[in-house]
Length: 358
Image (cartoon, rainbow, N blue to C red; front, side, top):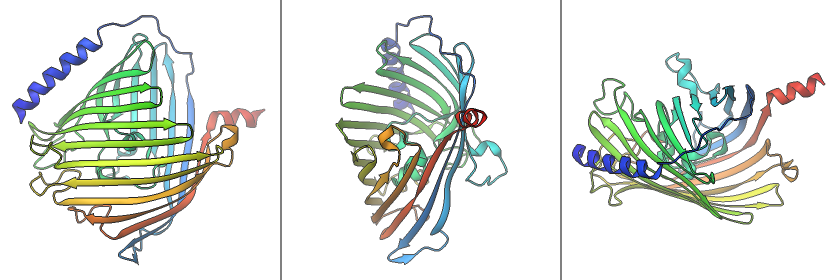
């Protein structure tokens, strides 16, 4: 596997280099030093297993309470920081609840470099969406450690509708992976974003160490099709620690169909399917002997949507699980169901302060 990975990595680097040969100079962003946002989501949850309510998982919950700060600190240098306050610091480390905190250097109109704690660049629309925007998701999404220290380089085309990113970061399998004794595990990620008319792609090829010198490979095809007020997102994630697994023995499929009515009401239906064969490596994000489907849908209501403002949202969603989860401690279990309704709000803190001072 290590030799195969090395060959694939060399070919990918060569293709990436040839594709990103040209760049233009002179890009500078407007000097906005500081933007501050606060966002929160409050839910009532009812979670059941085979018709029996799961106490502790049900009831009123503050699902998310986040602080986000962005801005430009010098010409061509921007930063972004998002911090969660609704998740406990299990080891007392404030940084564990920092989703990301990175500095980006926009060298030219086409090229940018970034370093710090970043989102691991894995393709797919479910993965791309912020957690506060998701009500239920695949078993893979529920377990992936998607924020890691690393660095990346991005090339954006002159039209701005396509970009290629190469990222080296800590492996999402981290120090707690199989037989891993330290943090010295890495991931190598190639990520493509392209928008062409009604179709937008979020694709990636990823190699993540789960043990030193041993890699779990992903090929992810994230597809969004949009027609008027109707949107279909279809993600296909194929995984494997061997070529045999990559022949669709270890994969996840996520599909969501949504339709916006009068700019205020969004109706959606979503299905996810996680499958891992019995011979797969144990202890990764989706366990062996998993054949699990989640089927559900919901409604979102934006009171000020007709004004182009989606900072306040009411929601209700339901999902039912069927099949086997090889991880007995996993999030989704056979004959489990999940119902939620609640409210989300987002605040531009600086704009609010300016308005108050006026």
